[in-house]
Length: 109
Image (cartoon, rainbow, N blue to C red; front, side, top):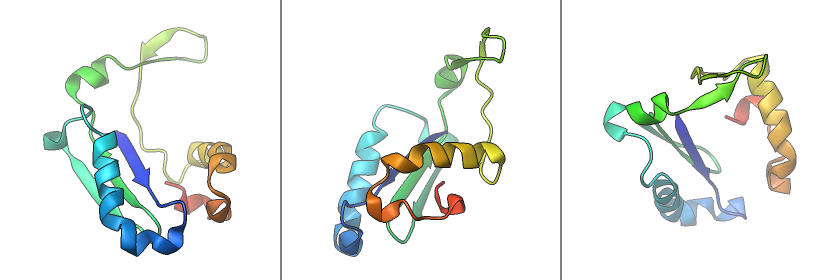
């Protein structure tokens, strides 16, 4: 799943800049994924989100290392609400703008 989230630096201007946020999100997804296989848009309180399914080729060309270091096809899973989600959210929190660092883990999806 490709996932893009876009928010203005100053979230107080989100309502004014929302259409530009959508443009940036779709520009970021240019050339990846296949919207005909599934694409979802979500307008949050401070950001827009676009999720798009991988193409067949992207799924088959995506590899990862297993726990023993062997390369294996990437198993795509939804980690929301799991310990893995919490681990990833905590790892990225320092890279968020200061105004967003206080968000609850559940909101960092």
